Image 1 (cartoon, rainbow, N blue to C red):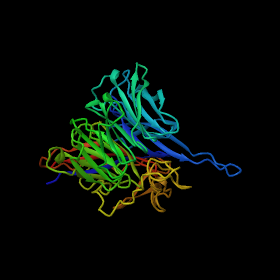
Image 2 (cartoon, rainbow, N blue to C red; image 1 turned 45 degrees about the vertical axis):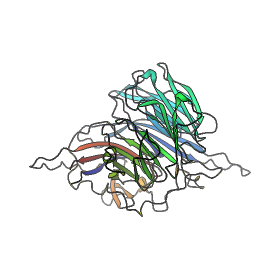
Image 3 (cartoon, rainbow, N blue to C red; image 1 turned 120 degrees about the horizontal axis):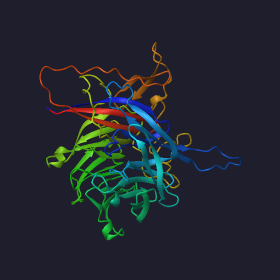
Image 4 (cartoon, rainbow, N blue to C red; image 1 turned 60 degrees about the horizontal axis):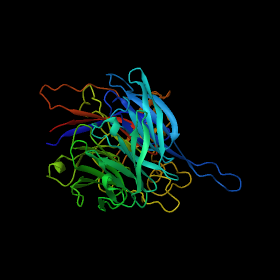
Length: 485
């Protein structure tokens, strides 16, 4: 019998701007903190004489705390919001720097910015800018990664890698207790946008990058950046996600607009270990922080999926199994992350929360991925052609068609109750859920204790996740419960 799993939405947050990045803090003692970044394209009004200014890319950084207290109706509490240049990627350093968590942000001004937490988790905390470094003129910083993925590096040896819209890869180091940035090297890695750059977490001298030129490349900084150590053309479209497995050496996951997740043995990059078709462009991949074979995939037009790579890693399969999907999103699935928090309390009862998650859509569903290669003069987003006048809010793909993507916008109160009715659509189903009252306060689903079975049942593994969808500017916090067969 296969393992049984289900997902359950815990809270839905309107981020006002389009949400594209979300990260749980990995530093011990701060696991309850969640950062969310947004991106919005604003077109200025036309001036007299027909002249117009270029569009502005603006964003906002949110900091939240998640409460694990039993009976908490709205577990996610906002601690801070700060307007900023549009945020295209962000990640926490996995180890404390000067005894504090440090957040790296890749922004639309072409800079890597560092923000450090002040205060304490219990009495109140906030992010404060401590350092910034421009990667070069006329570019967007598109991604970043820390060399600390296994949580074992000392603060003195921390490095950061960034990629940008000019196709460049930049390697930086932290200097001193003030967490100032120093550029070690920068090179042209790709012909078009370098969507993603990442470290080999087992060897910080080895980097990987992926670009809109459909190339996946490896680099060894000890031998210089003039020539990659490998170039793979196995993906047929732009490579936009890469992550090294922090639990098992030589295991690498990559994703592309071609809708495939590939698993590799980094020692043999001519042919992947596995190829899984997820039916949506793979914008982000995240390995589970404690369970080696579990991989979270944000699949743009086809929601979020949890892949079990166990059979691939033990050599018995060439395809990962999609064991759960989270489909309660109206728009492009972008940001995604696992939390390290332990969830208290029982898993949802049988039948509870049904319809919030299900199997991956059928072959013919979830199609329509935008062409990721921008035409000349375009490239306002992270993928696909620049939005036409009046759309313009996205990082990737076209705006939803009329009738789609209503998200939190439905203002009509639920009949007889005075609650805002929110209508969700997915490739497989539609849901109406009253989640807020007329004052905008969160109204959770009623919690029903799971019935106790007389016979002993296998233990349930529970994980906390956060994901965000783009055009409907929504952050979702949800749990995934899995019972082994």
